[in-house]
Image (tube, rainbow, N blue to C red; front, side, top):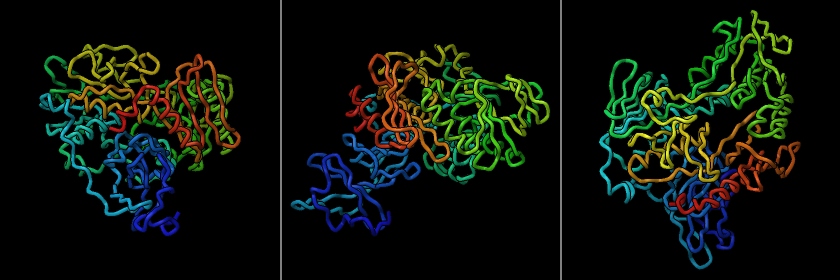
Length: 515
């Protein structure tokens, strides 16, 4: 909607047009602004999420926070701060003045000053130095949060990648499809690391960890000492041996370099076979189909994503892909490749210029295992994300933490979960003792349709469908013993936010989230 079609908030808005907990959108000059009412208080903040420009006017107010419907970023109405990833930058604020039954939005307020740390952290001596191993979601989010919390000591971020921390979800979506420019991919420009005094070390693999001496050793022989350490080594693709296939015929997707290499290989291909019905596999199928390639998907399941989302959504996604020309070969796998001829276990053959392997990832645990940390299908951490070695924390794909909703230890490979764990780990490195109890969230986008998922359902005994798959508008609730574990939505962004808020409410998390 054009700015001139929305009310000028500086000219005044009738009080009764801003309902309790509701959102009223207008403009201040050339900027879109939302007005929010919380009891006797009124807030005016920017209407555009700082993570990919989501429409906050269509979001959800939860206590003193405003949630984005696009990817569930969370902002403080009081300060504008991005409280929870995937957004990192604040939204602007304006002063609101009430005169009788009219609200006026006045001047823009100054950005909040950098925190000095919480009272709990201030009572402790800050760490002399922090080293972060891993340049993915959790590692970057932790480094960023350390500075946002006012930590002034040395921060070193060591990454095995040759590219700075990037927006990994985009690598299999718009970027791979050719719809996103290269400058979308870095999470921050090079100047950010200089300005924030974060020492970013790229193309360096850490090979050993001495927990007692508080040192890590890298492949180039250098040692790096720390007072506090965060392990955020992430995951790596599961490799699949394909008899007869040359290295040039196989492709995996995890890093920016992988995505660029896949784009280059796809440019010379006519038909691609994707092995695996995972999220990555299906997003790659959609992206390469958008580039005009013939795409076949070979997967072991009856329906794609059935293990994670159930048969209903799996069938929906398969139908969506088939409507765009993707051909599925379910309950099958590849046996060998002879030149361009791929032979499946069923005996069928397919032409394949390129095989893309998307059969899952495994956590990179080598460093933690070598150091003698407690391992159980991941690095075991407590509710504060601290490992069995004091002063060493773990976050992201490798961390297996006590989930307060299920009462079980879980390890979840979601981008936003990793970012939020990195943020909590950073605050705990500073002594804040904040429990990690965020509701897990992820999304996939294929052929213009987004599926969003909140919660975590490893097993369920009941699904409740509200709406219609055919209409591409529904919510699927996953339950066990009558208790809601997770909710997946299609074209119901506000309902997804509401489901997340309800799960938070069940844990009494709202008060902390808005602080």
